Amino acid sequence: MNKRLGGRRGGRLVALLTAMIVVLTGLACRRAEESGPSRVEIDPSQLSSREWPELERRARGTTVNYAMWAGDEARNRYFRGPFADELRQRYGIELRIVPLGDVAEAVNKLLNEKGAGKTRGGSIDMIWINGENFGTARQGGVLWGPFADALPHIGRYADEARQRDFGTPIEGYEAPWQRAQFVMAWDTGRMAAPPADIPGLIEWIRANPGRFTYPAPPDFTGSVFLRHLLYHFGGGPEKFQQGFDEELYQRTADQVFALLRELRPALWRRGETYPANPRDADRLFVNREIDLTMSYGPAFASERIARGEYPATVRTFVFTSGTIGNYNYLAIPFNAANPTGALVVINHLMGVESLLDQSRRLGITFPLDPARLSAAERDLVAALPRGPATLTTEELASHLLPEPAVRYLERLERDWRERVLQP
Image (tube, rainbow, N blue to C red):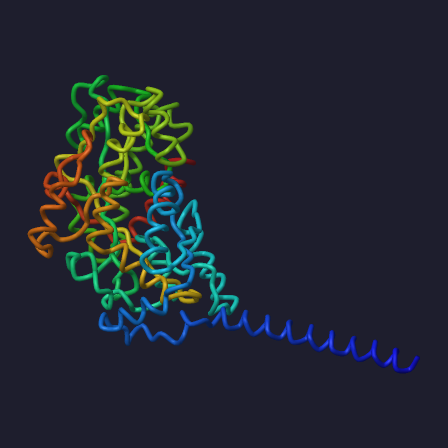
């Protein structure tokens, strides 16, 4: 009896010890995953392109959580499909998309995590970012770096892409990736020619009531439309590049908002409501409720023609005075669980081979400086298909205007709500 009892107790003791070992092992594994081989003290200030083979080796077998704007289905399919497959095959990296309705969501999450002391094991390893979101992230100290200048592929980008983002010094805390430029679209089957410039657009809106609208700021496309008006009334982009000038802003913004209030009854639905984003504006354009639409993507109309969403007669245009363009960037959060894997993915996205593939599949404007490409690479770029509605690279480049300092963007978006949406 006592022996049987002792045997049961012994068995229970063994079982208890085994369970404790399993629990402790699990905790150790979780700690190892949090600090993991990808997190082994990487000092970004000591990064060098010479170390790249070792970084690629250490990234193998890891997962990279990529936070990106999810508003374009073609890009969603590409990054979840062909691009993720390529990373898996070439580097042994699993890519997990973290979809965002607005990049500000991710920046606010990082700010909250920093405030809560979560400095490691974050749920985002890399983020698609630029403009005011980058400025907010830098001010809040929630980006990892500097790292960009150590990337082997960064040397193919123009120097301007590595200096400032909406006036905020980059200082290596984000890496240039894609280039965007504002264009507008019209249907040649409905309209012989679009307005040539901002004054022409204003007169066209007055003469065609109900046939124009723009996405409501802070949507990035609606916001850039406002910045074109700022440049128009402010005498061009030059005055808006070096920091924020309150007197200049007040003088110019007064004219911008006075015009928008005046035009409001001539807009779609008399300006009582606005599209929430470019997709909503596209639907109005396709349904013939408006005659002009807009995008930051120069190839957007060609993409939609190819998908059967736009009629083949749609074309794009830029103003004779130019349109605003910028770079999109990739950054790494301060508490990324896998900065090593993020470095490898970011560098791959910036490579000539990958950018050519993105251009073919997504219609993005090839962003690298032609002078820094080989003759063979330039031939490959020249051979990229250009859709029927896409302007030439030369025409876009000759009409490119820089973004203003980020404070102008923030004030325009805030004041539009107070002075136009709710006057």
